[in-house]
Length: 354
Length: 218
Image 1 (spheres, helix red, strand yellow):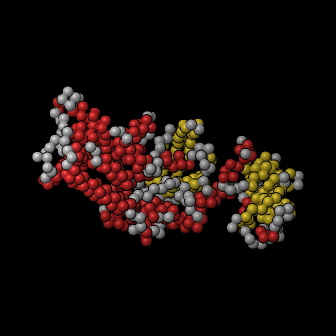
Image 2 (cartoon, rainbow over the protein chains, first blue to last red):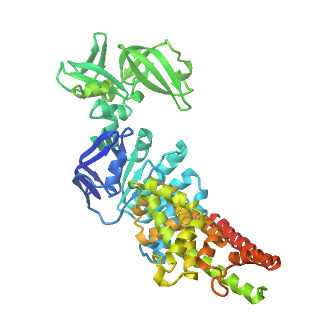
Image 3 (cartoon, rainbow over the protein chains, first blue to last red):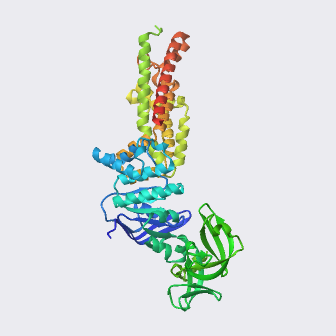
């Protein structure tokens, strides 16, 4: 697929009081009609990358190549609305580029419609709620009919339901307009809800760029695994017959991931670890003891002591086992072979241990 | 001879308005761009410069008048322009009095905008001319505050206009200098008539601007 924007051998250097920060990206493409989530902890260089893509900062080396016609526009983390109505806010940029009034009308109507704020057209922008303001700035950006749209934490300060609705509208607008979108976020759940591909950035280096599913289920390193929520990481040695040996009493099923004797990390997503056997789902990996229980309105998270380490799993809060289970209980654990991810244990080991 | 006639009253009032509004427009034309530039840019010595401007707001007008008067005096720096005791000299003094007020209030208004304001507007592809217009719209409340403060300052100014204009009948006499003169002469009726007009002017202008400000906010 042709990219709308392509980055090659990019290097950005920033000197500040805190020291020198380098962002390096060897190759990254934004494709039309696709949402790429740029995920990473605070200070990993996400916003810097976005600013370079937007042309607001110049790289020290490498290049940012625009391969599609149409503007590149960006929505900031703390978006501003101009004094005046919602309609005026969307209209102003279109007027400044000299579009015909009929074309302006069409674009304003379309973009306000995309984001469900057509009814607010005459509302003063400074009277909007946080969610409505987010929708306004997205509509304002879409009205420019950009080839590339860069969004810096677009779901900040929104409650879960508002995030879901905005994600849905954003996805629909992207599908209809074929704009290439990059969304920067530090929040995994928000990223997963909106994107097709995920790029993981850590300490200024791009760790992995892949489809959403691949990054979530097959992270390339323990660092990425932790960032994408694969929080169960256990050191093991590969054994014969598709197993990983944690200790003499504990083994995990694997799907042929290397030569026997290789030292590896085993990653299992919490949602893939099942407590209480007998449902024919996965292979039993033995008993564990409940170490602690934490609940929110949606999920109950269990910390389980197993083979001298703590594993985490989620249950639906307030239902079945989640209501009955108590700290100190012994439970049976099982996991499907394909949900056990084997990671190489090399230089990354120290980082994963941190 | 010293009695105040209604034709004098009108002439003095019109001259007062013309001097003050001219000074205000010149001060705005100079002060707003300076305020915008200083409010948005970071450079070494910015803080010191802001300190100078802020202290300029409190500069005694009598000192400003002294400096301007000396500048336009026969052997002064601008003496050959022969503008000593002229409307032009009065306007010059008033511009210097109004300028720090306008610059400081515009800086405050611009500084209150988001640090990324300019970048955000640029990423929308908005041209420089439109960016300036948008910026002025965003800081309109600060601008109105600057206009009210400056106008209030120069309309009631007496020392500096006396030093630079000299209260010449039919030439440089304005409301404040005329009030001063009639008070000194013990002609309180005339002084009060002029004072009533000055207060009326102030109230009308302040009311008008407040009304505009209220409209700008809603």
